Length: 382
Image (tube, rainbow, N blue to C red; front, side, top):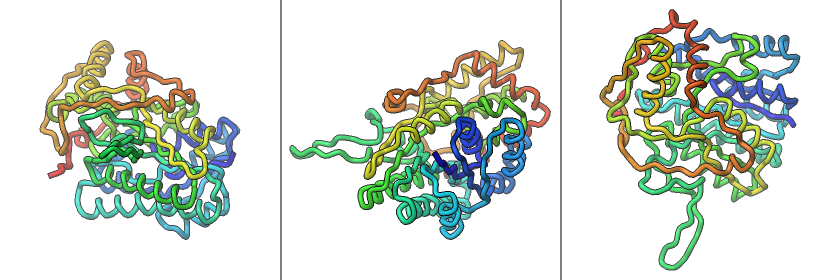
């Protein structure tokens, strides 16, 4: 199977490319280094030095014998993207090529404009390239659980059966995003659904929760193959951020009351989910939606888990409440269904003390490279 990974330089894109190449897929990655540029522009550089895509692909090939094709392409530019698409003519496209940060999207007009145009433009171009050049190609799109918001009813897996005035119909589950970034993901889903039902393309939309972790089977081969790892307030997810704060001797910063509940998953489970999706493609004319996470935690629960393990390792870990820079409910009902991927064969890696210890052990050698000025919230919603 020929697979094209868009956003192949990113925290998830690069591990996905290695994972699939190691399993015999013909893998091509596309990226234009947008994530790297925005990190530099916001003083949010990652913890680890990460070689460019060409160098990483060369290192991976030398160590593993597996090849990854690299194309430096702006996926929001249809001319560039369609040329690369026709050159490689993939059977499946894994679409990570979006500005991935809620805080970044809320900085100012320029960051909001970039987020809006890049994210919607890339998705629109993927749809049209598939429609025009290879309608059988399966689009696997990384959405986000953040599309749903925090409704006071159970979150179904993408769809909701509605009965109104004695009549019934199934609709996309109502979305109420909490940032511009998450709103672009909602618009992605609406775009995909329009083109699925109008032209019969095949799409799997993965509503992914926040991801944590660093090591995968492939990145363990060489430190230079580790993913782009952010720990800052703009691009770093909460578990990764808490781990670095603990190592640096800084309090784990809980926003507001800390009751914010989300579904989380290990980076290795992201790789499993994506492979399951491409090996079990959606039917033509089907927008298939999976909620992609393995466990639900409040921010307080995550802080407590990481604090307890850090203390066992001899770290002086404290927890501190700070003013919430975001506009969100800090205590709420949250019950999201997530059976679809488990039924396809997902074998979850849970956030155990042993797993947290292993992440600490990977990151501790980089203690001297941590810049604590990047961790506290620098962006406010209002």
